[in-house]
Image (cartoon, rainbow, N blue to C red):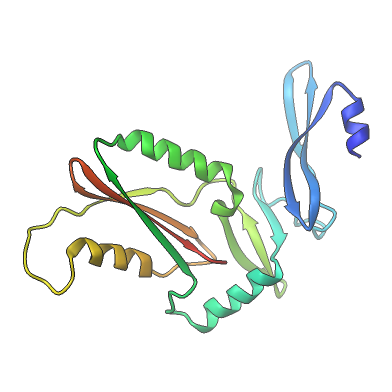
Length: 193
């Protein structure tokens, strides 16, 4: 198939994805009007289930994802499958630039736009066309008072422990805590599924 496509100068292969094996997700062809694209169902997709919309796809879940799905259903309030990380940012920060960078990152990586659902008794991945996650900004400036736990640490812990909805998503949370005008903490929490 690759040889046939590449021999025709008017057609090129674009946008691959791995679903068991590397398969073309769409063919892009040049015509008199410019470039047009058409989704191509994967050989492993069930008939009528390859495209959910213009760019959303339904794929079978991997064995590991099925295990994590089951673990998440059994231990509803557990944070064992949460993967939190944070980074301190010192100096001036452009919120619009950070928002744009995060939006591009999410648009580029299908895993950050994926949710899960059971279809006909089988767990499936739904790769959504639109990003579900976005940057949330929280003002973490607080009065310095006495408490058992640092207020910023408490905010970060609460963010990391917030429950994920695997069906509706997003499965990535990105939160910027503003400590003061020159200090921020960027917290990213992903679900391990």
